[in-house]
Image (cartoon, rainbow over all chains, first blue to last red; front, side, top):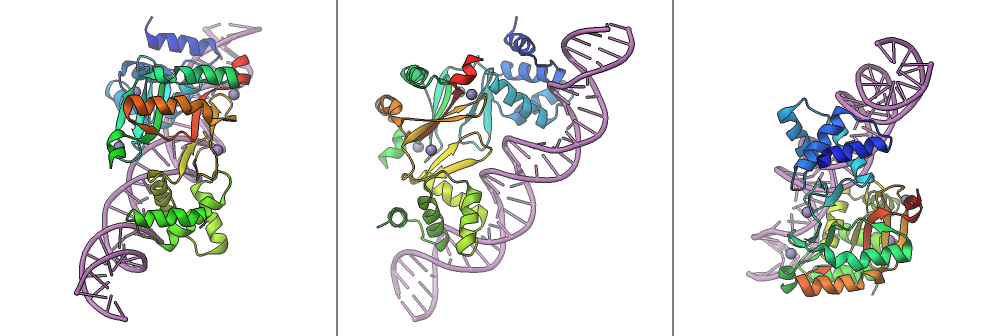
Length: 141
Length: 141
DNA sequence: TTATCTATTGCGAATAGTTGCAATAGATAA
DNA sequence: TTATCTATTGCAACTATTCGCAATAGATAA
Ligand SMILES: [Mn+2]
Ligand SMILES: [Mn+2]
Ligand SMILES: [Zn+2]
Ligand SMILES: [Zn+2]
């Protein structure tokens, strides 16, 4: 069973309806090794199938995010990027001075994840995380 | 010297021009103990002075953020919120299921800050941070 | 003071993302 | 199969945020 099928099956189990639109969006998202924007998903679907409305794409991505099947990240590029689990885990260090994005090991967040769960009962999404700050180059100036 | 004056003076030192708009926006932001949206800043300025264009407010908030004088946060409320240092430090745990926002001690991030600096030379902005995940109540269900 | 240079502003248009609503179509049970 | 219920979709309108550009006005040096 592909990852897309796994997600779709689980969505149905949770009471959501399975529509061709949702199947296509999940398929496009899981197929992508990189982050994609909502607009990129629409473009990819247009290549092979009938178009899906951008509002539906946003709603589906939001659903996948809420249900824990997609990650949503702000990389300071003007639009949000989405990915599933075949991408990562890792974190993105985003420089607020120069915009550079450094990919870092998600292991630096292991202790934090444990602390938040123990102290606040909160289970954070840390396997594809963005942290803003200032990069080494910009610190030198 | 008020916090607003300190920020404005430092901006000038860094080569930025001091305009009445910037002074008013910094003033409004530092006066607010809570987070504010760009729209709220415009409203406050309208009460007492001549209006400042919303685009200028966004540009100034972006500048303050880039220069390290303001924090910008996504609390999943549909718009970004901004604050200066008189607010915090603390972090916000945002539940992606119910939207609840839990305020937590920023000390849980101390080790992370040190790690990122040592391992990547990256200085993260951690004193007013948002982390998405699932809250204790929603985990129970 | 005045002239010069150019960063900043306001405005309107553009882009990103959300929402209300009527039409459509999954899911379920008869 | 068919009928029923209502979740989901497409569309258009709307909100949030960004951007190009011409006009304005800080800063600096004469
Ligand atoms: Mn990534
Ligand atoms: Mn706060
Ligand atoms: Zn940088
Ligand atoms: Zn919750």
